[in-house]
Amino acid sequence: MTDTLIVPTFDEPATEAAGRKLVIICSKGNLDMAYPGLILGAAALGEGIETHLFFTFWGLDMITTSRMENLKFTMLGNTAMHLTQAPKMPIPALMGSIPGMTGVATKMMRKQIADLEIPTVPEMLEQITQMGGHLWACRMSFDMMKLNEADLYEEVEAVISASDFMEISEGAQIIFI
Amino acid sequence: MPTTMIAGRPIDVNDEGFLSSYDQWDEKLGAELAKLIGIDMTEAHWAPIRFLRSDYPARGETATLRRASTVGGFAIKDLFELFPGKPAKKMAYIAGLPKPKGCV
Image 1: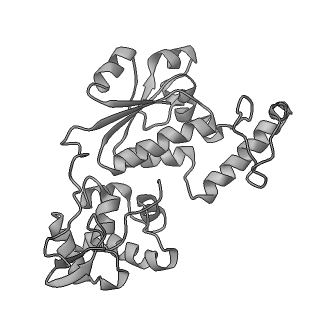
Image 2 (image 1 turned 90 degrees about the vertical axis):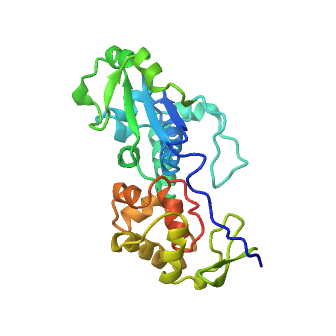
């Protein structure tokens, strides 16, 4: 028993006022590589941290409306594949190249994600913007992939250059994915 | 497990100050907890707090912002306005519940 009042400290040190700022660079378009940035971004916003997501190269697929719902997971090149049903059984790398295997693996991963009540990629982006997060597209990748602004998820604020990125990321902690 | 005096009565809390006994809470205490973190409760504040309280017993964990939005029907934007900065944690504290465990 103590007479001291124990109250959680909510407003320090991570508040916007304290200047903590996070920039997440999303450079991959695989389903499994889309989630780390989205989850960390939503978590940061939930902690009151100013958060920006910058989509570059294959990461642009995450904010391209015709593709964002169909990101895929491939076993190819992934040595950390395990079946949850038989965790000790090795999965030969060659299996990843069997036609249709990427579709099967994607379907399995989607189900595992949904079972944890984790939202889909578009739903995550929607939540991030509702939480006040900022979405930016990379100019060079955008031009290279011959995209139009109408191809992008509507909440993307702008297509920006590398030097714009430098301005936005000033003073921020940066995570590259 | 520490005990702290809030509103003139002993309350079990964890090291951070979150309540650790679901049954020690009532709305009067909730209003006191809110005051301690600088929030004056209005009806708009109470609605999500009541949702968190009713959602907790069956699941054994505190609803995340996502759940408050999809199941409780509260707009995430509104929750940020009502409980600025860290809405999920602030709501959990006022509702006398543990911090949410879920990532989203």
